[in-house]
Image (cartoon, rainbow, N blue to C red; front, top):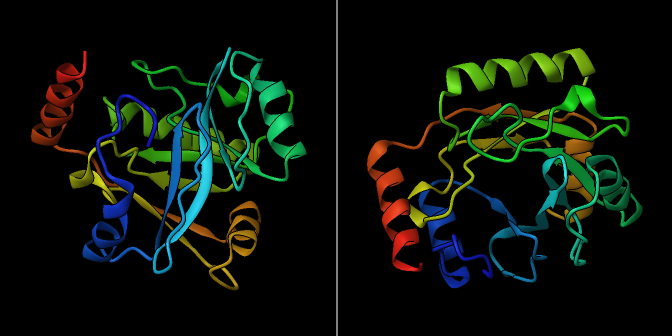
Length: 199
């Protein structure tokens, strides 16, 4: 993967997913489209875009997205490309986060459980409330940057098939169950040390 804070080799994704009982994974590198493919593991293409209002995940797209646009414009662009827009880690005080209630363009889902969130008892509660108020599907993600944390939090998707189009449609239609989990201190420290080694 292309971002400087990702430390998982794409060739290892299949084995890590199998170890954790996952059928697949969504790859959302920062401001860079996913171009990975796998014959045995479902890989949902996507990207985590830095809008002027915070991070937005575009799933089901493989195109390069322009960064720095408003959150509303970014969501509209994701929809124009046929993808779905997910608001990750809303209300996170330590990362660039979109406040869903401030949007004029409706996203497709809200990540209510993010395993990397600090003070998650506060941020998760706010995210759950926002998703309920807006009537949006709820998802969960590990926000994993190292292989040891893949699948810490995940989403069960009731899809008609393993095809990307069916999975995306299932998420959009709310056929999802978010499963929470948190990344422990040792793995947070491991990630920090790896990031520091690249500076």
